[in-house]
Amino acid sequence: MNKIKTIHFVGVKGVGMAPLAIIAKEAGFEVSGCDIDEQFITDAPLAKAGIKPMIGFDNEHIEDCDLVITTGAHGGFKNPEVLRAKALGILVWTQGQAVGEFMKGKIFDRTFEGVSVAGSHGKTTTTAMIATVLKENRMDPSFLIGTGDISSLGSCGHFGKGKTFVVEADEYATEPQFDKTPKFLWQRPRIGVVTNIEFDHPDLYSSMVDLRKAFLNFANCIQGDGVLIACLDDPETRIVLKDYKSNVITYGFSKNADYYIDKISIEPEKIFFWVNTKDTLLGEFSLSVTGEHNALNALAAIITCLELGISIANIKKGLVLFKGTKRRLEFIGNLPSGAMLYDDYAHHPTEIKKTLEAVKSSYPNKKIVCIFQPHTYSRTKSLFEQFVTSFSSADIVVIMDIFASSRESIDPSVSSKLLIEEISKIHKNALYISNADDVIKYMGQQAFGNNYIIITMGAGNVYKIAKQLMV
Image (cartoon, helix red, strand yellow):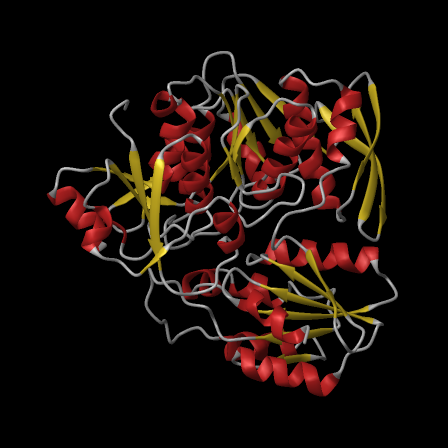
């Protein structure tokens, strides 16, 4: 490990790769990276860190490096730079393996106390909340969060001087074609968090049984006298907990949980909620984001920070400074026509439903226009019926063409046209608009006023519409 001086990142703009590169740069390594010539939400944090991605993939990029870290995208192990690195005998890690190795600290000659946040939904927000509280309490954590800039943290990745390393724990494959090991199994945290478990990757998991097994294996990666912090409200998590034999702290709205939310008050851009343990009132907490799901995310963060030795008063002070993350119900601005514009990463039916419910609860007198871009044919097909019923809180639903992953081929048995046909049977204002240009044209024609909220939604490139809508 101490011979590694230069690290090259293949697909450096990816939301999992960019924070790794930033951490390596801040730790003193010489960092290079490459990617395709497209706009990404990580462009700003990479530029701020002084990392300028080279465009395209070329063997010459890796001639002088000691370690190559590759993404599962852009060909994965078949990427020409990765093949060249292996031919030259250069050490190659995947993104998932690199997260685990960074947490171990040997590459930095450090020892960390790891915190890994897993879950089908909410892990980005929960990880960012924990890191924000630690930062505001001068604990200077290292953190790796799969998004763009986070206002309360200043970046999506950081190599801190403190002993705590907080990371997202992703259940997707290490390398989709050649190594289907769930990425979070490379991690060895002292504290593990599970926010929820839902079927989100049908291309990797054949059933809920397989997915539960993966999360149980993740829980069993927790080290020594560490603890699993798990949401008792989630039915799949409860099933996993039956087979988990080590330390557990549960949380939720359920009063059967070790920590529970007793009452909650939701306002536009703000939440107030009260937390109890089974025998103690911890008091009122506030957040500068909305939605009951974010109160649950915050409760997971609160318990984690208590386990890390932070006082209730200092947790409250840190949490209130959290302003959300990139592409998680992110307020973009007011359109020239007067409507408020938000952008959200939701791509699973549960995420869509909860996000739209949160907006409706915060703005009961406004109408909601949801512009949704389905992400991957496999997910759209597997969860088709759930997608159909996910938009009940929206007044107008616009469905764009499916954003296909590079790791899958087109499946003609499922399409956005078929989806909108089914949605239209239960929703009076649902329409199919295939591409971004036509969506922008439609929005201009409608000129939605200040009694509307527009939300672009999906894990593909739908967020790029926002810039043109703001003109």
